[in-house]
Length: 191
Image (cartoon, rainbow, N blue to C red; front, side, top):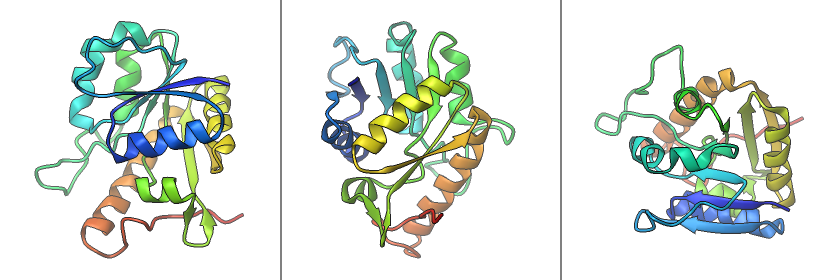
């Protein structure tokens, strides 16, 4: 089993913590008031809004070396809610990976809502967590955590696929904000 450190104690952080714990993994939730607290997990989930990532990396970047770092952010423009704020040929995950060259960065959980993570379903389908990254062992580790927690894990390809995952996450957020789908809805994969 692994220890999963989750930086961020909001609904997504809590839902991911419950999944990891359900699968028998150790979990530590680290909030913004825990700035001096050490990150002990071999898997670290950045469960903060995209604008907070820079501060987290400035405070904790060195301590993330050698760890699997999971970016769950959707880098949208929170002022207008109408665009992503990363270059069209990049992603939040790619920017994080560039700042953490000693870490194994993955993109995951950004195409699901906390409600579907907690429920374990999207409508009649099991909740699917899409995982993108360049390190096969890191993806397998996270997929094992997700599967042990009762969800479906799907390898979405290399970290270059993070930009498509972020676009999909952005679409889902705008549909929910526009009341076209509920915050407990989302996309499901059928074999």
